[in-house]
Image (cartoon, rainbow, N blue to C red; front, side, top):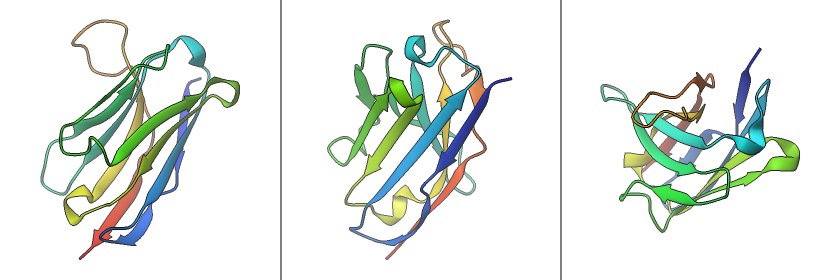
Length: 119
């Protein structure tokens, strides 16, 4: 059974930082590409950052330079370090196991963790 457990969300003032963590079980983590998505109220879920099994990263334009995705294969964990947060970053953040098929939705999702950035 695949499980993705996120933690680290919370309430922070604009300009602050949060560190999200996602620990996976039931998958071959070291060979899986991992993603962080977010969903703001009334908006579609969007890809924020991704990291390949080799550690190559990619970011949504609006977070590049502020967010950093990383992975620790020994701990089956993917991290999203978020700095200089602004209210537009508010939403539920989900980690996901990327599908090996190009263009396909992720195979597995975590339960989500709430991030709220106040002005």
